[in-house]
Length: 206
Image (cartoon, one colour):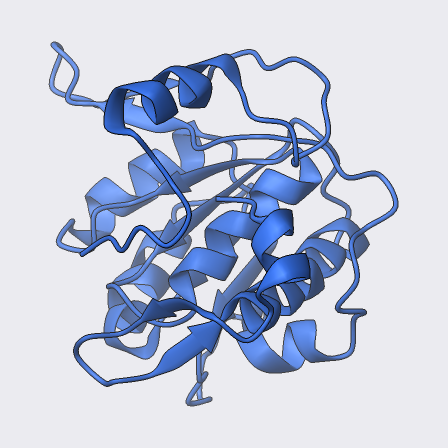
């Protein structure tokens, strides 16, 4: 996802368009947002190899929520937005997530899940409506807005920690060990996929 080339060469080109709302986010905007979140996660104490989770529907904050981890050497787990509070709590706790990012649409389920996640120290809600009785809750934009939009000093590549369906009734996390390298360098897996799927500049994905 890290796209330094596009930021430098095409800062005003659309990185993505939300079909449901028409919102357009450019490469420069996406880069700045992801960097701010990476700084915020570092400031909260997360270091390379730590973990956070994302539980929300598709929205214009989703990609930056992933991109911050890819810049900061953090594992992140994208949780299916249709899961119950109990299922969400299991994944958040099992993954040792310290931060959970969610949305107003999933806020109720996320806060119910958080009650069973003692390792969770921060909950970032996009457009936080207020009124939470959990002092870990913060508004996503307010929590990240004061940080620089430039890269963190110790950028390091990382990737999602996916969960399998499992064979014992519980999903199992799959954390891939990664080489220490900057996020601008492509991992062997993505080099393979680039050749397989013929990624190229100006390609549009739906």
